Image (cartoon, rainbow, N blue to C red; front, side, top):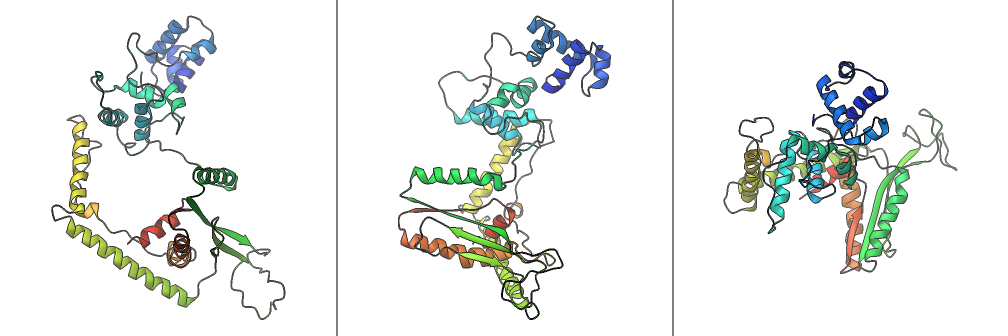
Length: 379
């Protein structure tokens, strides 16, 4: 009964009290609901509502809390939010009851109190109410939708409609401490200079089209810009063009050199992890301690969801950073060496030089190219 969603309960009540279907007929129409369960849902809703009105019955379709006992987890509380966050985050592949109790135990350990703590763990019915109940869902400030198993937090992609919201957010950050904060906003966008199709090129005004070697399939350029409120430093602008053979070879050489440095750092961390007292060794010990505590919290006979002990090779592993020979162009390699190293980082350092004591932040889109470029330059 606890695993039947609120939507299915509403269908049961609709079929029974509006369409006048029998309980076996209702069970044949709704997956996961037996005739006995449908009868129990209707009888409990009718007993709590006290009427045959469908709208009133729908308000009482969810299980009522046990009378005389306070709720273990209140809607909107820290425990409710952290349980919902854990079951759609790091524990979404585990059994929901085990994941919820793991998060619930962490909340209880983080807060010491002189009052008596509730004994035992959350059962399946309580976990179902926290994850899919209407009150807990509406009180969640991050995600107000019910959380079935394996559902992650859905984030919509940023578009031009979000530019106004982002601008207001940046203005809010600047208003908190306008005299001590500088934001560098940067990003890339395609700039259309003309062109009527994939086979035609519009030449700039004053250029002889018979002598100009235009190898671009269309006259569209990718433009990257960065800007801040401090106009004493020239704002950088970079336009991406199709790479010549010499530039491609140079980027490939620099990529190989940077990857070799990253591999050397991984080898160094592996060697340090064998020496007691080093930060790498302590990280390995702490990680395995967390895994042991998590496995100990699971039922003794449960094998699904148990984590393996972390090894040095799995903790410090190489990342495959290779350039796609077919793609090329504006990828993470070009972004790392052309945008970050040659343009953005010098602009940031110059702002820091002429603004001592101020906090300077770089704001850019949350896309994979940027993340991969930063991992490539991590040293």
